[in-house]
Amino acid sequence: MALNSVSIALTGSGGAGVMTSGQVLVDAAAKAGWYGLMARSLGPQIRGGESAALLRLSPSPVQAMDDCYDLMLAVDWGNIERFASEIPLTSKSIIITDPEQGDVPAIMLAKNPIVVPIPLKEIAASVPQGRVNMVALGIVAALAGVPEEFCIEVLAAALKKKGPEALETSIAAMRAGAAHADKVQGVPKLDAAVKTDKERWSITGNEATGLGVLRGGVRYVAAYPITPATEVLEYMAPQLPKLGGCLVQAEDELASINMVIGGSFGGVPAMTSTSGPGLALMTEAIGLAVASETPLVVVNVQRGGPSTGIPTKSEQSDLNIAVYGLHGDAPHIVTAPTSIADCLFTAQWTVYLAEAMQAPAILLSDQAMGQARAIIDRPADVAFIGQRLKPEMTDGAIDEGYLRYKVTADGVSPMAIPGMKGGEYTADGLEHSPRGTPSTQAQHHQEQLDKRERKITGFDYGSHWAEIEGDGEIAVVTWGSVTEQVREGIDRVAEAGGPKVKLISLRLIAPALPEKMAAELAGVSKVLVVEQCHGKQFTKYLKASYTLPPVVQTLNRPGPLAIRPYEVVAALNALAATSA
Image: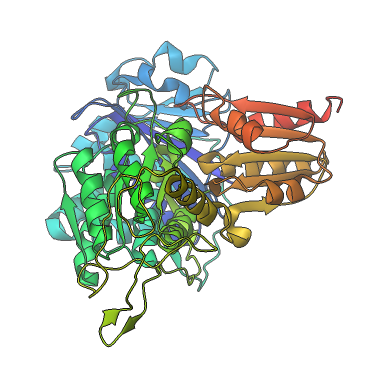
């Protein structure tokens, strides 16, 4: 069904406080009984630059942005041209602007939005030590219908360390702003919020990923901070010691991945977090983990590329390096969460897969979900805990004749932990015999290649390999953060009486599972692939790995412009009119 929602953009120069106002608003909406989503658009500058808090509030669960914004409040117009295209407006959109900040830039007037001048700075000055972002919060909360009491409750928690004076000043500025909200007409009103006893979380994709790997059993993290993955580490750093683990900030990505290999070799489930440039540096060491059969998880929060690219913007363009980037025949696991909420499950599941198969796993998140904050229902607890196979011991020692890389039916062989008597073996990047002794024999190379491949391709991934919904002759195959936009687009098509559409969003990218995909595509004659990538990497991977129906079309675009639900609707209607 069409979502009843209101979309809001708060913009200003870095340091103007729009992110704080946005987060208070979405958390207050949650307390009132609504759901919400807040994405961030930032410039790459260390200080200053442009920034925007992009929000969508709704009485129904929401994890994707709408087609356009109903309301935009600009604290100032600093560098707006750098991200104006990320804030689509219409003739019904409303812009609130402070006349003291100058005229509305022409680029924001292209669709003839309604402009309402409100003297934000002047209102803030009327309150001792008042801040413009709190005035903005008051106006927007009043227009969206978010009760003041919940804004105050969230502010009280956020400003607890700053003392009562800071809270009183913020409340006064917020109320001063709310008093001017009646100057604005036409902002969509949400259905009344319904309070519920069901627990809800305010969480980002990066926080959910961190929680997921902790639940999966990770207790050792080594990583080097990099945008937009740093928040994974910031979340985990204080949590790990509570669980008996630790986080080490390494000097670079090369050090971090090798520290993780060492920690995992020592028997502790381990992971690192990075983005595209860091993943590129790690690929040789990940190959070492493949050869030595050392489990680990690499969380890669994608950003615009190549090279340094666009560090603060989202893109799904690390697919190729994640799947194909290791030298030699190096079977490994690649997963991808389908939403902010799913980051928790997929991260936990990924740790389980890595430990069970004694293999490296790369989890592909991205900036769009990693740094976005959503109000979600509390996810269900799942039982996936990383457990690696260890050798049996008799009288405190491993049975004689232990073979670390023994050729087994499922490809998984017991992994001794340093200190286990009788479990000594060589683990390095050289090809080896079942004992672990380096070997150049063709037989050893063949059987170890087969073994490493067999354990990945023969594993039972169950139903978790993809999120599958609906049925029809048309299927949308997608992955990652665009899944929610696709889901909303499919719902709109159904509501309008359009063609029936099946959704297949891959959670397991590699290895490919041709039999499972074939079963889901039975009866499907047309496929629409949706991806946030210039080079159609996902489309090409699907064609290389699966047998697809005769008609395959792609809706793709590089970052940072998000694919919107209306574009999915248009692509599906066009595909429906195409002859099979």
